[in-house]
Amino acid sequence: MAVPYYDSINLIERLHRQFMDVLKVELERANVFDINNVQCLILHNISGEELTVGELTVRGYYLGSNVSYNVKKMVENGYLVQERSIHDKRSVRVKLSDKGRKLNEAIVHLYKRHEERLAGAGLSDTRLESMNQTLRDLETFWGEQIGSGGLNLAAG
Image 1 (cartoon, rainbow, N blue to C red):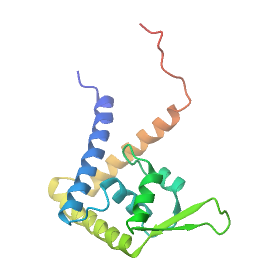
Image 2: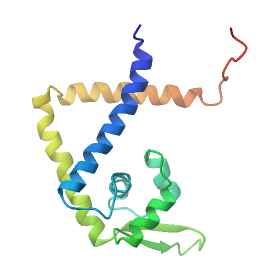
Image 3: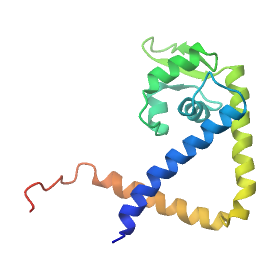
């Protein structure tokens, strides 16, 4: 028996994994091997801003990854520049380097190509907006569930 709620949970997970595969394939096609798909998503979430690792963590879900480790690798590979905060020496902020900006521009171009092809796949802006509202509503619902109740292990 298919239950829409369970289908939604499974679809959300599968879609995220599939999108990560899209990024992986695109990096390979571009012969970019010094950054992985998760790091690429983190890089894109930074875009033109300066953020802390904590701010990055809140911005996205990075499938089973350690954001601090990934930021360190991106700094080592020249995609990010890391700077200590002037006001709080314990806080480190990161921003895109020239190499990072170039890759981010390619990601933006990829997204635009996808947008151009969406209508041909039957995914109009109206359908996407409706789906996005449903996902935001689900996000709100799940947020409300945190701290309310728990598993009823006594049920049998």
